[in-house]
Image (cartoon, rainbow, N blue to C red; front, top):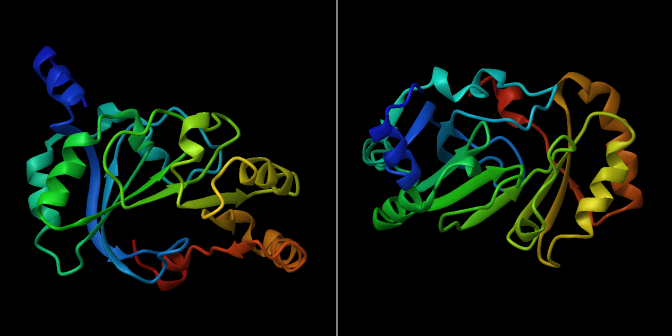
Length: 212
């Protein structure tokens, strides 16, 4: 998203965002898995997960500065009144305006974030997925409705417990195998959850369904 001074001003206000893609689909992961939702993927991320499956989202300059009013209007055309804002790392941006406009349309607001930046906006559901490369700000743990830890290797179980100690008592806990290691990690996750039943399994069911 090549920006002019005017673009920078609008971006800071949150009335434009670098839009990578938007699409209507079925939520594939976590607590709301299986539910229809409109996804808004915002470009830009410096968290740098080596196993990220949307690395094309990292460079915000590759994605057009798009009017939030247009994005909200597109979302409102679909029967499910639920929007998931993801990335990239969406919390890099000012998300007050987009959530305000979605709420005016009667649309529920969901976000998926690493928590590495201050969280703006009015959210009905916050999915916090911490990354070791850029851990969450402490202030974001209390905002999480759902904690989703990606399990790439055995050490990630310890990382999961470190983060679980920070969230509120009502936060729902999930362990999700990293897709490329799912066959290797899934048996370990099953055993771990059977021994630590506060955790739940999250799967990337959209990949099994071959949908976005």
